[in-house]
Length: 460
View 1 (tube, rainbow, N blue to C red):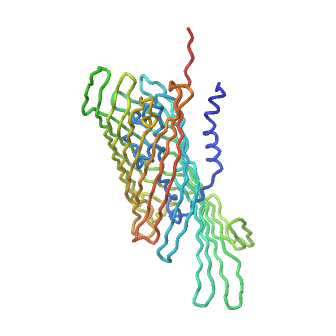
View 2 (view 1 turned 45 degrees about the horizontal axis):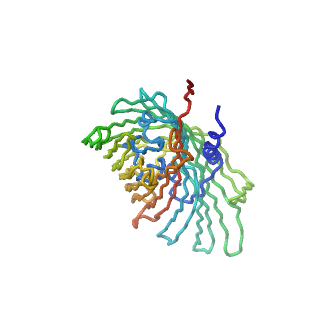
View 3 (view 1 turned 90 degrees about the vertical axis):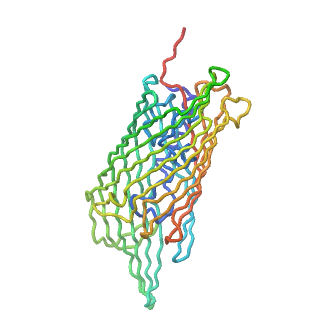
């Protein structure tokens, strides 16, 4: 049975679940029209976001000495979960969209949940752990108005609207040995994609008005996914200091993940009607056609990620921690070749991303200096987005900084650890060769609580 203090500590997670079930993103991006929507630029935990998205080679020892985050991007890391950990993140993003033809500029600010993950050690001796959670993968949200003045002087008005996105509920297990571990994530990808086109036509000469036409397509989809992960580490050099318990090690960790091809089951409703339609009300006067529950499928390509990280590990009688980490990672997915929506391809590219991340923690055992306990992070990534609206490709880049702030309790650290992880990202999508360019500033707050749970108390 949970204590009052434990319930209080779980309050942020309860609030996040409420946000997941009720929040609607306010992003307004025409890029989200294609594929399954805008990929969440930061589909990692806050720790990795601050390091340019570095995930596959990021080991448990790199979290520091104050609890840990759940690295759900590589299930092999679950084998190193040493305390029950609750981890959540939320994003505040400001987007700026620029159009070259016609020249225009649009801004939107939105707040969305990023992830909710729980990691549990099953058997620490045998290095078996598990994790489960919920996170959004893509977003579809845009509203674009288009007004055309024809040569006759008549007006043609179009309003393109899209809503939805894909979410993921996952469950994973990891098993480790001395210097190697493997893991698997599985669960459901689910979501919807609703696209509407409202068209109005009006004669300019005699002000004759025609009712608007509505073309609406609403697709609901879901399906299983499977992700495999591996991670290992080997020592490069080791130096023992004056005390036999004190030593410095330089190690190289490596990791890889492979997400298999997915085939989502879908049902689609198609409506064609005329009437009066606004963003808040729809009044259909005549429905030309309604077709419901059209069966179909959505194919998502496999994705691969590989990475390495060099880190310096300090060991003393107080414990072990990684003082600094330098990591490199490469991601790839063949969206152009493998994606289809009801058997139809879309304006997509084969995507790739190169990520570089660094981390530094001066000395978490220096109890006299709080800022020596803080973990400082920075990262950079660049590559090609999977959306390709003008056949010129969309180059993407992102620079990030962040830190992990241990939260002190009224008593010294013992078996409960709370860390506030922060990440600030500056990114851009598109360049001068594209009709549209998008830049963003994103601030992410992550809350990680590690505790010894599910252990029976023993009394002498």
